[in-house]
Amino acid sequence: MATRTAPSVTEEFISRLAQRAVAAEELRRLPAETVEDFRTSGLAGLLLPARYGGRQSEFPEILDPIRRMAHGCASSAWTLGFYMLHNWMLALFGEQAQDEVFAAGPVLCPAPLAPTGRGVPDGDGIRLSGRWSWATGVMDADWIMVGAICGPDDAPYPALVLLPAADIRVEDVWHTAGMRATGSNDVVIENVLVPSHRLVKVIDIYSGTAPGAELHDASAYRWPMVPALALVAAMPALGSAEWVADLFAERLAERVLAYSGAAQKNQPAAQIRLGDARVRLRALRGLLDDTVDRIQDAVDARERISRPVRADARAAAAYIVHESRSVIADLLEASGASAQFVTNPLQRAKRDVDVICGHVVFDYDVARELSGALEAGVKISPISMI
Image (cartoon, rainbow, N blue to C red):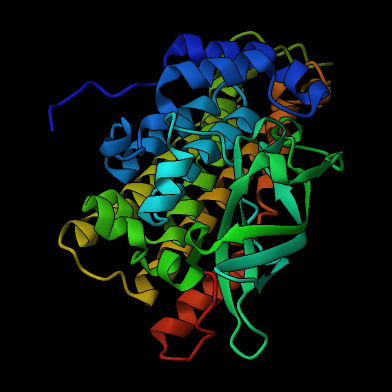
């Protein structure tokens, strides 16, 4: 395959996200201009298979663009990052499903993964019904993937189910303190017939042995899903913490403390906060690189990614998110009451990352428990989220 220059996130792209951040919050979804910028940027095709006109890049190549987009708007980075990830997930389905969904190239495909629906066998397919929450980006969806318990009552199995966005109903429930622009509304599906080729078993997705891994024969499609999802979802938090550190440094140059009239840049406490944030962020980037390299080396070698390695990756991603949140909180604590005005982007970054920490994959107690249990040789559920 000929080498091509991969699309990147330009400073102009990031600047436009920042300029639209307030409007995006008010809309509670991405502005149409942002969606159009993304569709024309080429970013959605980074992990699209080459046979469908995509870049078929190595999986880690999507992480840096998502992290950098958060320097403009965390909600936008989260939503666009998941659009990128979900094109990769679609490439894990069988060939017939991919031929359908990628007929015109990459798509916008939300994926509420919790198996809160039921797929009952019906001929060569299932009848799907249910309600799903947290459908990030659903307001602009072309297709959608949902988690469901499928199969007969005596032999059920969790699966991802793919269907056109025209087959769903969206209920507007997304009124939140942070991550408002993600438009993560609820989805309702009622008795929709889905052919069997648009199903893929979760156990294969988790382990990196889904049909697409064999179809495309590229390392990106052998990545296990939970580490992939967790690392992608951690990037808006890490990028937000980097951005807050940059804003804090800029404010030091001009901020004068109330009552004392002292320049904050001359205060040792402020200098310590900034220096501490920078080294903590460097440590997080080192942890990220180590976690990514460990999995990438294994998939390059065609090794099966063990459950302990997958659990360690989830725990690392959870640590990155929670430590990013802590960095932001420490810097805001030293930024004074003026940082809490709604016109100040610092408070939005804190609200956004507080909400990110609530994602199930970042449950820090569960993530550490799974990692520790597997190292200690304790049995865990075969469908644990790792």
